[in-house]
Image (cartoon, rainbow, N blue to C red):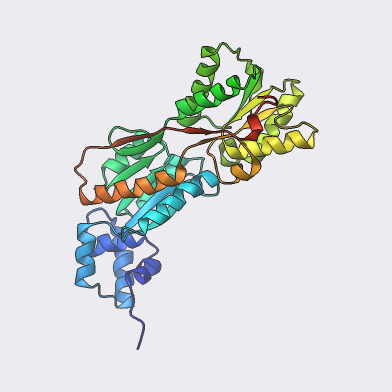
Length: 338
């Protein structure tokens, strides 16, 4: 018996998303004429006849969720996506991941939308500019934001200010008075909030802030949130002859790179320089690296649960969820004798 063609085959032949085929079948107005023609041609060529119950399902609720992320090659994003994947198994939905990249995010995101409107969207750590907001409001689909706040959408956000504050507070209470920070290469809302919390803690506890102790790596990979950037930051501090007693890194990858560079140059951690990261990715436990836990996996699961609720009732008022960070203390910041 010949294999029966499916909606997946039609999508592949037409070069569009499955959700776009679904919208063409249901005569949705949110598909361009050229795309509609490509899909209809593929349907004819494959002699595809959709089942009535499948079309009814497509009319009533989402089948395919698009997850937009600026990158999926870092442990932080991977941990959230793991939560998304594990929770989506309980919903009967499926998902695709779209990498917008860290540069030209707005252009890349709107280009993705124009290729075919998804049934629902999860948008991760992407700034909702006026252009993106306008495009989203034109779409009659559920949208959940992670890592960005906007009053018109459900969002799950981390308390980055508090994370920066408790990081500095921990280092101060260990007795360090010369404290530096490795920042991302590219500024963002989360990095600004984190640095503001860091600075406020120093001010509140009466510790002077030496601006020479604040540094970024040169590498632009992952917006400077990489091992390479952490190692480069150490080189810059040493070139200034300004190595602090303790360093707060913007993420764990930076911290790992910084520790590697310090040890290569003969410095001990925490004996000469205490180092802490942010995110509490799994490897930090094996490296004895102090970090700030953002509960990324739980956030991924929570976002899908919320999106499933939103799919059933898209008229609900937007729900705002703030995740409080937790300090996880390990040997990398413990001052000898404490």
